[in-house]
Every structure is written in C-alpha cells, then in structure tokens.
Image (cartoon, rainbow, N blue to C red; front, top):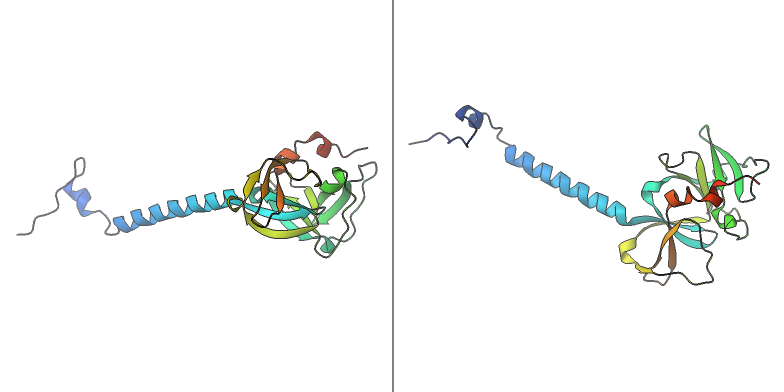
Length: 194
C-alpha cells in the first residue's frame, strides 16, 4: 500500500505536495554558485597586474586599475602650465580629460621614453576617474601566492610611492606591489603645481 509523504513539522501535507521536483537541483546549483564566487574572489585577491614603471617591476591590484591604453593612440599630450615636470599633461580619452603622471620621474628617475610598449593605465573610476599613469610596459597578470614576500628590494632599485609590499618571484625578479589607493593619498603625488 502506498503511503502519502509525511509532512515535516511546521509544514502541511499540501506544502509537501507542492514542493518543486527540482528543489535538490536548485540547492546544488546555489551551493555551486557560492563556491564559484568564493573561488573567483579569492583568485582576484591574489592576482596582480604586472607592469614596468621606469624599468621597475610593479604589481597593481586589478580592482584598482581601470583600462590600459597604448600611449601611441593618445596623440600628443596637452601640457598644463605651472605643473611639476612629472605631470605629463592631459589626454582626451573618449571625450574625458585624463591627467597623465610619470611615477618614475616623480621619484627622481629620468623621464620615461615613449616606446611601442608604452601604455597609460587609467585608474579605476571608483578611485580617480581622470587620472592615468605612464607605464613602460604591461607584462600580464601574476599570482602573488607564487611569490615570496621580502622585507625590501635591492638598494639599487628606484622606490616607488604607494608601495605596500615587496615580492620576489621564482626567477629572482623583485616586484614592488603598489596600492593606488595609497598613492592617491600621497601629498607629493597630489601636489602637481609648481
């Protein structure tokens, strides 16, 4: 003899009969989605954009970066009178004026030479929508968990502003991890006037 399903405490027989047949599948999908989102956020936490600024290998948090544009596509930058030499000028990027800074020059290095690999990193709109940094090159994405954190880099390397950590990869390259949030609160970086 076939018995009807017994209701769980607090549920009526009518509720049991109306339970969707794919409830278990939906619960599995929800669980899978949660795990994928957790893995994705963990990956984005450990992934960094690898760039060269004035020949110095630097790592940038992907969430702080906006877009990367080849310098050659911007045309001539418009100089702004009475600004620091490291403030290169303004570029028109799709109708928006973006100020471009040479971070290496700010730190006392010679001006970066424009080359075919030169790029401008426009900062994330949530940080500073009208600010860009001149990059000597973009080297892809690196996983910081594959690197060793070190106390400081060799004394011969230029020390960038906004550095929060130093890393060494398996090939011996020493990287400076920059926080663009820290850079944007740095008095010397914010003072572009002479």
